[in-house]
Image 1 (cartoon, rainbow, N blue to C red):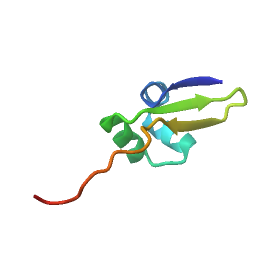
Image 2: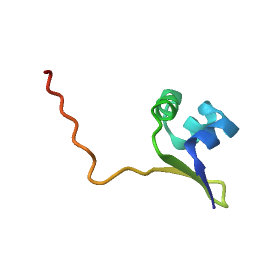
Image 3: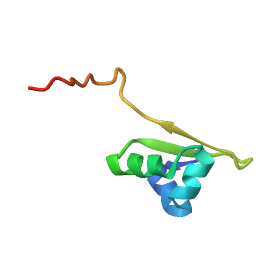
Length: 67
């Protein structure tokens, strides 16, 4: 198994192929890269690919109140 950041994987394979193998749209890859999400892509020996995101727990609460 090989593990690398989403940014590194997308740089090697392109955003479109990355999106296709992960089952998302290219725009989702672009936004994840733009906002700096901590996503790691795992490539297994059989060629399958999956991704996981590392996030703090509990997630911070964001207020939508207009002040």
